[in-house]
Picture (tube, one colour):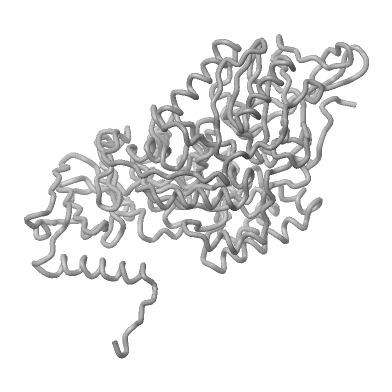
Length: 610
């Protein structure tokens, strides 16, 4: 058309046609709504109020929020929601599918009925194991599920190249390919510059490479997530600048940190997962200091299948936030309009004309009881159950067979010393945190091998490189799991995902590690040389595509019960807790395949004090 606009993008043409149909329905008497939610209590996250109105939907979009009588035609489905609350679908702004050991499809099966309609996932874990091929496979699966799944990819793998070994090395040279791939909307947590001062002093080339990646992402209008545990002042400022000055942080663990970061313009992702629970502390910046909550966002980071099935997902996190004294509508803002604003997801996060019709129907606002869920104007869940069939996605062989080393020997896990006793170094587990402590403990030596002290909960711990690149085995001691006998091992170990093992004796640890190797990745629990129970994780050694979400929930619960009842373990979610003791960017001490890491000082320590 002369003087008109030529639209070349097929998606833009489709949306233009859909929007024209919305306008026709609103302005003529020939088009009508597909569905009308009649007489509900609308949760308006723009004005922070609740009022009675209808919501009319057509073609997957919201037509109007208000009186919808003139939009009801002969084929319009009218749902009376009198007394119910209507909120935008919830967004989890930072999470890892791999931590649940579930595929995207099975995570959707467990999370969608509780109102979570959008997931922003960081495939950092499969990226460490397999590189771009793993991240792209996950992005491909995101295309087939009914909910909205977007990925933010790592700009650097591994996070600390001098301190750990990943299955694949990722840097700025991979960003053009990844950031232009479907369903990838930006760069994920910038862990490579978490320990800002030591990275600057010891590996400054990492900063240069990260800036190349983040600058390119920003040139595309894409987001860059931060990761700034315990950073203040100039170090925090440097980290913010590295992300492109629009920074987020999901590693904030104290009110003091939250106050500092909010003052500096950081979006604080208040984490509340299965083993990392920081929301109650972070929210004090709002409840006690009266801070504006527009940059406060709720996220899970890591959640196990059993919690998803039994507790719920973002609705549970909102409920906990309300219990901390936050107004329900303000808490809902933290999982709707706040994250949508941060990510630039302009089509969702609020109930307004032209927005995607993702709606949670809630019967109890304080308890966050979700009765029904609509995605794109279609009912997908009711009374906690899916009412749709989920499509199938088959992961290619290229993301399997990631364990490439042979069996380990007892000698490789032993810590040797002369004399009758030594002072050993032990990582102290801190429950429900990524942070860990550091201990020096007195230990006996028997025939040149340092002994664990089971009576005082000082256990052996090892980290076995599994990709066949180095053959490294890191080892030290650990306190906090409470095992009285046996051992367990897993190929889930943030973030490089080598094989972590903990135990009371070396022989059982060897058996557990070798079972994980034999399975091509997974979890194994052992006592007296016998494998008590195991779980195979064939996708990157991180995810099972052989079980449904409920089956994974049941299986992991059974494994945890074996650790508790037969090995005497006292830490809940022991596999998740162990996996984070390999996180080399989180203070104070961690264990990688290269050894015991003093995170604060960016160096490798021997397991024995010399």
